[in-house]
Image (cartoon, rainbow over all chains, first blue to last red):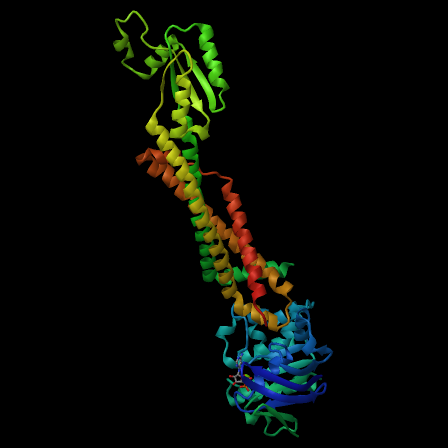
Length: 216
Length: 289
Ligand SMILES: Nc1ncnc2c1ncn2[C@@H]1O[C@H](COP(=O)(O)OP(=O)(O)O)[C@@H](O)[C@H]1O
Ligand SMILES: [Mg+2]
């Protein structure tokens, strides 16, 4: 599903990722970890082409990301549900409209039912007509998850999905992501928060000084 | 696409304050443009009519026969610097004199004979109404047989010529200013539309929206804002025009004659519509993620 081959990424003079290679198969759930500033967010951005690698090759599903034409980028992104660390909700749209965006962009039909179905999964059906700013951090996080899953993408990227949440809400969110994965969606979670993967048997990729170290 | 229209209208309503600001920005820049246009247009009208007020008066000798007079008239009409001539016989001159001078009856009373000479009034072509050319023309005419004297207002000719020349300079100067204003409006409209929507456009792109999908509602929004801004501008212009004409005009009569070409109104709205649309297009295109 996701393949990195000798990927190098600089920001000006800062070499964030030195020589990263890994492979994630369809249906897997993988943690990407490392201290803050180690390049986890950067690694996710390379997958949905918000940043371009300086060297190496990246493949996502059928897309050869590194040689993608500009006009093809939207089609890559439609196959990826992204749970942004800073949410990226449109503040003057209701919860319903924010979630519906993923479907409208793909020109899907049956928007109403699909949006309510996704909101039910994150237990926010009753907030459909609210605006993001009146929601708590945990609720906003769940709206972002609903928006990421509503169009049923093959790949979900979650960047620090529990960063601003209390422990109980964090557990609930992780359960939700687990459920999504169990239904066959590939999931990559970037987090510096060890609690999230302490008891997991899932793959953990740790970024250390720009290199990737895999812990089984 | 009802979603596009719904989305544009909703968005305009939701961001009503920032939208009002964009509209005022477009509107006030356009207003500057319209007022400048109004000034130039009226100054131009005023100065281009001035030469029409100017005329040369050619007094004829007293004892000319009808044929000789006709010959002089045709000769004057044939000149390429002359726009038109008007002949007034002694009797005509008297009627004209009585018309313009109220107490003429008293002045002329007791005179058996008509003391006035017959004369020809000449309207020169606009481009010849300058002091040097008027002087040489009148000297030429004075040499014609049967012509007694040529009169013209030297000062008037000079002033008209000066105003005409300065009107051109002022027009060019204002045109440059207006061009700068237009560039400034276009630039700031784009900037406003861009910053207003930057975050939203970025999010849409990250969710996989094509430029086409993003453009449609934004362009519609930009267009609507443009039109509303244009309406603000023409309404203000109309109000200012009416104030000048009917308030200032009663105090300073010159301003009563101010002219506002109404065709400029729909044209302005069209311009601001185009501004809004192009502004949005550039704004969407500028975000590279
Ligand atoms: N757009 C950028 N321009 C320059 N430096 C950046 C940019 N984004 C991130 N960085 C730097 O790259 C490093 C890795 O950042 P990031 O990928 O966000 O780390 P993490 O998500 O692991 O905390 C940090 O030192 C950060 O300051
Ligand atoms: Mg990060």
